[in-house]
Length: 139
Ligand SMILES: [Zn+2]
Image: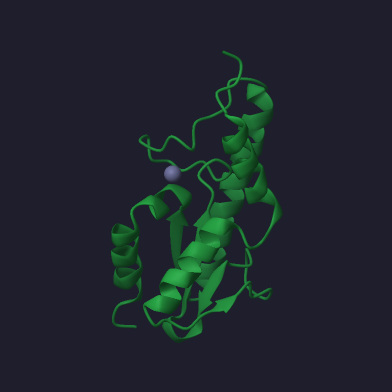
């Protein structure tokens, strides 16, 4: 089999590189809002233009597509690498990953706390809510 992606998976993955307001980021934003947290979007003055910024908590949240950012969890099926054009994809993923690392260290060096929410974590809303609450607790 040359390619393991269904058309739906492919379009979901492609949409993640384009827009700022990807669906996963919207879901996390709505969840935060419901939990009563106040936040700002895409602060351009911050490294990596985080999806969600919570100034009061001095915290930022990235919502990462598992495919493009290569979610390191071996159980994550969305992060599976394509079977074709392997060199192309590996170079692309390596570039994305090192950019993510640089972004996170730059933010942390400026005193921001950083949370990455992975796209596949949106499936379990209760667990994700706990993760967000824990991250933002007592700040
Ligand atoms: Zn994942």
